[in-house]
Length: 553
Ligand SMILES: Cc1cc2nc3c(=O)[nH]c(=O)nc-3n(C[C@H](O)[C@H](O)[C@H](O)COP(=O)(O)OP(=O)(O)OC[C@H]3O[C@@H](n4cnc5c(N)ncnc54)[C@H](O)[C@@H]3O)c2cc1C
Image (cartoon, rainbow, N blue to C red):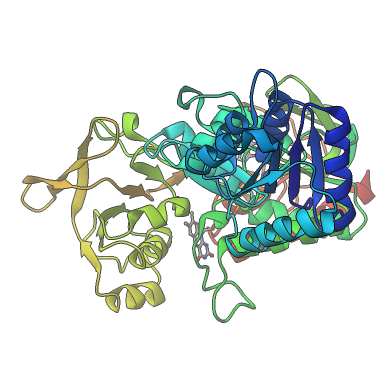
């Protein structure tokens, strides 16, 4: 991070140089001296420093400057850096104006020109101001900042994307004074949010995920046109395939449409993954796996959705992206997992991202403090979310269609839930409607035993219901079961017959799809075990089958 700035502004070039020289001589090793010769150019420098997330410690401004005098400059500059210490440089004749400024801009000091010798007149003043400034640290440190509205789906989408990609950021509501300062520095208004200010000072207005990815250091363009293995989807299965592929010397690219980690990345605590006796959060596991894959040389592309697969008749497989570009590979691993089904009840679609969330949306947990929240679903994902949110919310209500959780949730989680006093399970209960003006305010629940409905006040609904594979883009290229899951290996053999169009003199390998050289791993595979460990295992196993496939080519 850059040193904090000491800013000097004086319209007389000789005086301006002199003050900057004297300040630099004593403070140049710890502070960056920024010199300007007009109020306007000093303000421009201030805006830039603000957007970069850097600090201004002290501002020294000459009183008599044309267009904008020193007091007017300090008044505007303190909008951006209210904690910076302020000094007015004055001639003896302007002492009265300087004294008035003490109230107007909360001036810390006025310094009569000339200040020679600086050891006696300048440095003791600046030393004291720097001590005072250091004692009141500014928390707006260099980081990505997101400015948005509390109940706004686009603002939520930006935060969720950054959180899932493990990019740390600071969230500022539009009514936060720091948000107002940043918007002003960027020449923007509330109408422009969500606005993301990057650590290098760029402000992105209503950014797309691809914009965000490009600015926060995520790679979006392939470095090569041809790979040994192209893995589609960076959940546990895809990450597993990338780690094993790259570590075994295969040129490996991992393509992810949204964020590494997939569903597992949303898990607050995975307790049944081998090697983590105290559990591990999905974010931690993802971070480790991603670093491991990159260390072995795998290339990771984010915000790239694969929309087509071609190459049935040849040995080259082509993956098409949404923007029309493509990459080619000898082999492909389909690891696209599953996505949550939408809850079909009137009013909920319009409120998605504004109180209704699919998946854990852990970014929202602190905002649920002391509130009543509702979770729909009876599987482990819903149970984990309930335990996680119970640390924040006043009460967590789990709504399940069935009689209890025993058929759908692991025992260890059912036991944990029983021990948490602020979690309540409502069996045979479904959501039949939601309403609210700009965000969710009420839910209508239906009791499956009696058919009666009731309305509850809440602003929070988290949905974890049955998942489905999003494999429509595969079209007829790959055989799928009636639910859309990819058929592999023995499942492709109908009464011993190989799939239509299969030209090789062997049966498909265990994880191989109906297109030779294209494998499926993890939740997207028909009849797979929907677990982190099995997804990782299948990713690894796909790579060993890929070696076998490549050797036979
Ligand atoms: C909240 C939650 C908690 C869970 N807890 C546990 C647990 O404790 N223990 C356990 O064993 N399991 C748990 N699971 C299940 C486990 O996470 C999944 O079984 C596992 O993540 C499946 O991995 P996968 O790689 O096959 O698919 P996914 O994790 O679904 O990843 C698929 C990835 O592919 C990407 N993708 C999809 N289509 C495309 C495309 N066309 N182009 C590019 N990318 C694409 C997706 O964006 C996604 O990132 C949990 C799931 C959830 C949601």
